[in-house]
Image (tube, rainbow, N blue to C red):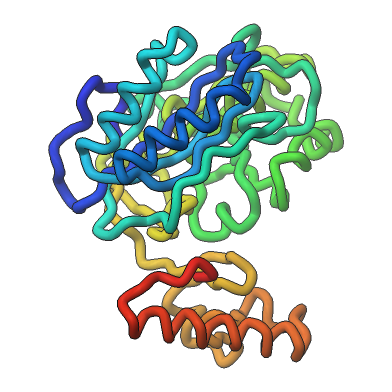
Length: 314
């Protein structure tokens, strides 16, 4: 991914540009912005999801270079978002089915009141300096993502909280007194937004030296050469690419459309895998009724493909 630019970079590895963005700012009239923003995205053929809340904007969108440029220019024309940063990657096919602009209580849901990254936040660490920080024996490295994300990739030596949702993270911190055993806390997430709140929360909990990876895993995978990398595995992304690897190349993972877990090629070979119905992660927790319902949906998806269409249920 690439940091802020007025005009996105030229096409490289895929027909579609994927732009990930977030911006924390006081935005009291956010509800009034939903329909105009939806219209601009639709008019420019852009798809994805953007979340609006009193604390700002967050989301990922995809489209042609011209379409993404138009939407980003529209956002930055507002005084609230004139400092908006986006990151870029490419996709070989459109990774979203439709465009959704949604109103939320938070642009990333932690569930803790009065956490404001504009007032308090950890120290940003550039990707080029990240290896030195997390290799320091005086540092505890924490992955703030959820368990289905950490399952396919993690930084070497990082602590995995194994949370199901980001809402569980504050209690995990409160219940792990051992986090105070070393002076430095280094945190990371996919693109940086979760760490904005997670580091703010850690600071309020009394941790002094709190750091987070600027631009997240995605920026690290773009900038740090693979031969120097301390990243192990692939990075889960929230679109139809499912994962990306070093250089932001599309990964080999697919998604189980029954439980939304990322699947490796080995997982696909499991006798518990049935496309669109079950996988090694969810087979044991689904009933026969569940599986039959998913089979009916999968038949509709297959029929849509034969007609050259994309079924929304996929």
